Image (cartoon, rainbow, N blue to C red; front, side, top):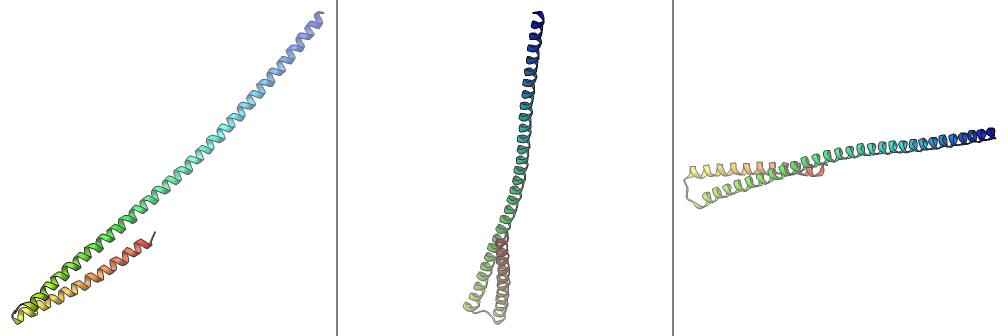
Length: 146
């Protein structure tokens, strides 16, 4: 009977030992799978962060380009407005000179001086109009470019 008891105890020990190791192996396999999944998730997250950072950098560059372009457009528009004002001012001066020539009885030499001054003003107007045309072309180029 003692032998049967000992044999029973040995068999029970053998069975419990095997199930304990089996549980331990199953638990470590589950932990390994969870760890691998966590590593994969961390890797994907890191890749997504890198991609997001690249996109943010690209957006910042695009924003800087847009701001530079906007500044160029504003500068070109301001130059055009300034030139238009100069043309208007010069035309007003020329008109005033023409009125003086036509309205007053000036001596001959004063009339010639005023006519010369008038022609100079007309030449200045033509130069400013040419400048204005060039500035408008530059603005068109800026608007057409990206």
